[in-house]
Length: 134
Image (cartoon, rainbow, N blue to C red; front, side, top):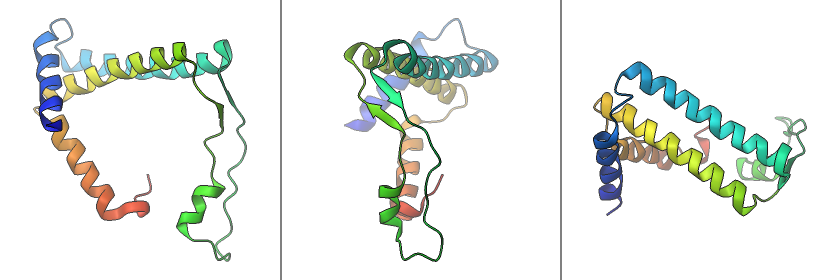
């Protein structure tokens, strides 16, 4: 069922993309959509204030300590305080949706299947698990 949703989305993108058919146009629109996501997140901090940042150095125990990889989750922080308000959540979700549109468009242009890519990444994660550092 989920593969049908991915394929339908990718097909709909393919049918609706008319103006930005060039690979260069798609790449530039993808980059623009990523910048819009960043801007929307920044605005939720600087304009709305629904979330705030408390960024500081991540404190990772030295290699001599007896901490395992599971305990690292407790040591590391996202630096985000608060939760997105409904307005910011809607704006950011919309920008991420636009980004998915251009990712799907890139996949279409390069004859890649978005669902297959997701499955392959999921398989890598399942194989490597928590050791899949990026």
